[in-house]
Length: 48
Image (cartoon, rainbow, N blue to C red; front, side, top):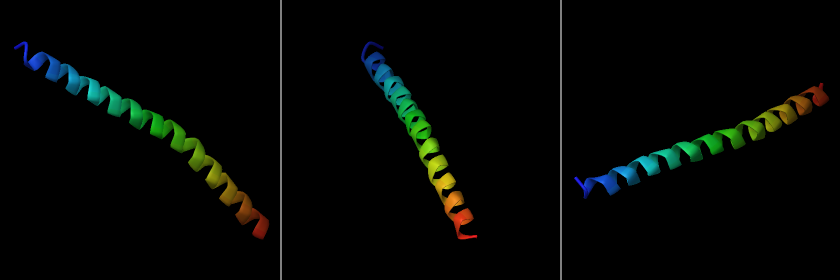
């Protein structure tokens, strides 16, 4: 049981870390996408 505990902790830690990184990625990607979409919309309006 003592052998499994560090492994379980490491697995949980890795899972939390991946979740956190995905969250960060999501938080960073949305504004970038939002800005680029807004830029594309402005460009489209400028054409017409």
